[in-house]
Length: 235
Image 1 (tube, rainbow, N blue to C red):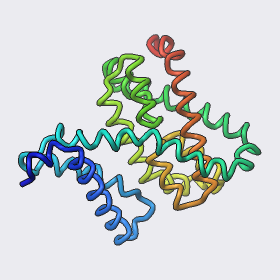
Image 2: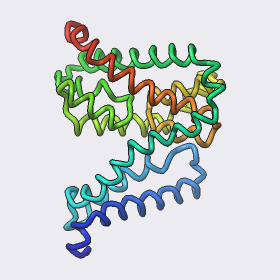
Image 3: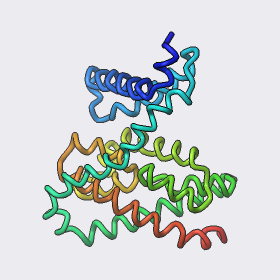
């Protein structure tokens, strides 16, 4: 179906990702599902394509996909722009933001580890899941350091982001949370960049505080997991 030279070129993975993403974005707008980011539909669509299209392997797709994966870092850094534009709001609420991120980070670490242990997950699986709330590049480095399974971490992080992008705002509305700063911190700390991308459709303040939350949650998680791990293993 596809020329061998194309399949083994980075253009295949990059082109396939862009085409499917654009198609999903068109579908989202067509169905007026703007609160759900296109990536929620694009990821399963790419997986189905690789599973059911003959003579196309994941390894061939990954050649180009690695280029897109590399852009996760710069894309996260780009969130600094709305952060800068709303720096006065952020500095005025610095203490609340810091406390919120610290509580969210500790809650994520303990809840995932204890729930996983209660359900009988192995130590390797537990170590792979506890960085689930931070962006993928940071989560993968944490997992590598503590001895987890990196592919499992990547899957859990992406799933967390997609779930958050789908339900975060509905859940906040249900709980009566109307403050954009509180919403941004909660979303950034729980579902990193994928979840925070939805904030762009809501307000600039929410997007900015979500960006702060992603960065500080990444730092806090990187520091706290190695420190808390000996204690967690005794539980």
